[in-house]
Image 1 (cartoon, rainbow, N blue to C red):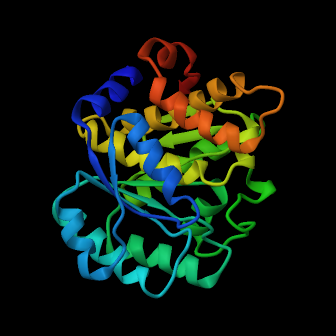
Image 2: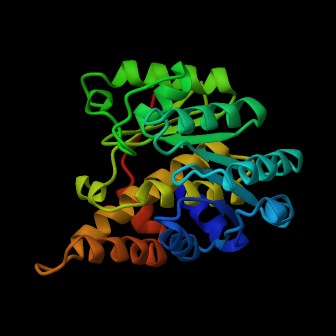
Length: 273
């Protein structure tokens, strides 16, 4: 059950090393705390591997790449892989620039990431080596709909098999696959796209869930994706007339903090293909 994956995060309190987007780092830290996990952020190459060694999981988010942090991503990633810790790659904006695309692909070449989470445009870029990412957002032509669902599922399964990972492709319909099975998840609100950082937050949650559920990784990643979507729905239902996107952001984090297993299980909407 997906609820058990959430309970395990709250029982084990995994420490997650986040080399992440400067734009969203505070929200990433707070959503980890809300879930029951703990965050640590260290992107100096001089300490990246050392900090990784004391953590339960690592998330590498390339949202604000620079020459100083790229070496830290490789050092931390190699240390986490050597320790067999869960690693999550979030290839933010891959396809928008050569630097982002090359960095993401080089990371995947040199380090095996058990989980890769991104939007469809970013994942297609990793698969093909180039893409049409619109900034950090998916290109409209890559939107997963009921009309192209089976083709999208087939692509995500193939990507997961080729890269020996769990691929989590998020958007209007979320897909999570280990190459064999694929969770098709229909939680969330379109208004979540008006908040910067929901994807970054989800990648961090994914690392926490993977660390707390090492023997059921596919289910753990699907649970993290469902939780973010359910939290968005709960948060939206709590908005007042005068509230805007910043209140929505805060209420999403609060919804994760207050989420009970019954609500989570009862409102998660998914099928497995």
